[in-house]
Length: 196
Image 1 (cartoon, rainbow, N blue to C red):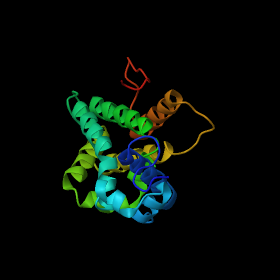
Image 2: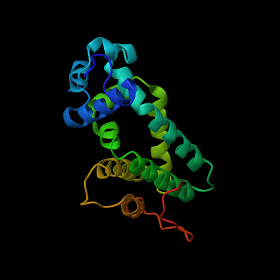
Image 3: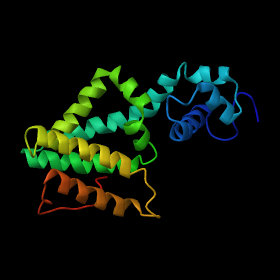
Image 4: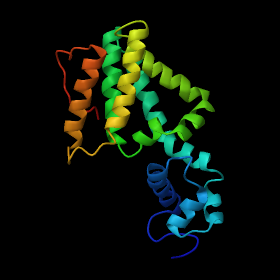
């Protein structure tokens, strides 16, 4: 294998894919740039050409998901009434989690990600807005606890292999469980299909 580029695909994308797999296996803190270069048969300098630090690589991986979450939060905030906002945030978050099944357990459960998020106040503020929308159906501490359970539960559940369950069924099950936890009734026109 060439020392500067793996066969097929772009080097940058191969680095991202290898990092995701190693983050999944070893955690963010347990994965070094050297491990990523070894995985791909690259020199460490080839990685530095694309990413100066592991945190820069992690930020690159997280950025599209954070952008999509921001869109889902804005959509939910535009709804009228707390319950409609909570429903919109729930279905939006589930569709995002299902679409990014390979990333969500890493992004939500890895201490290395939490450390990086603490350095990015705009992301922490976005997650708080999300939690507030989910909690809006039930004010106070109880609503906040339920929102935290829903967010953590969805993030963890999408990473589980449910014996070949397809994305549609996973989406339906997660929305149903989220509604129960948040005390939401399905809207009259409930369509459990993920939004496009």
